[in-house]
Length: 71
Figure 1 (tube, rainbow, N blue to C red):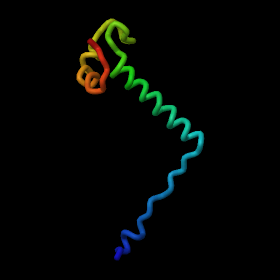
Figure 2 (tube, helix red, strand yellow):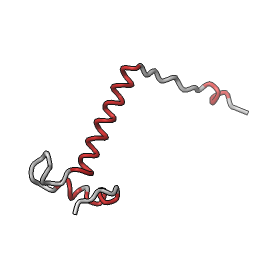
Figure 3 (tube, one colour):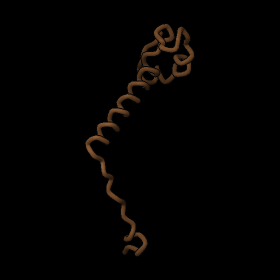
Figure 4 (tube, rainbow, N blue to C red):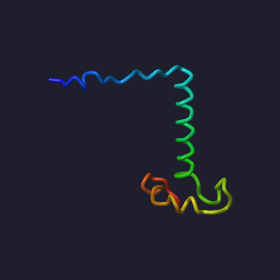
């Protein structure tokens, strides 16, 4: 048996047009590439933020957990 309160609650449909879907997919891919750069490719010497290893050392354990070599 369902109570009247539960049966009257319905989720609305999500309207995703092709343009909105493409924009959402593009932003997701861009953010994924940024995360991939910071976790896997930023080595300090090739950093876009100068010759520092702050980002590399901050993400060092995550880098090894994901299988990226750095030594």
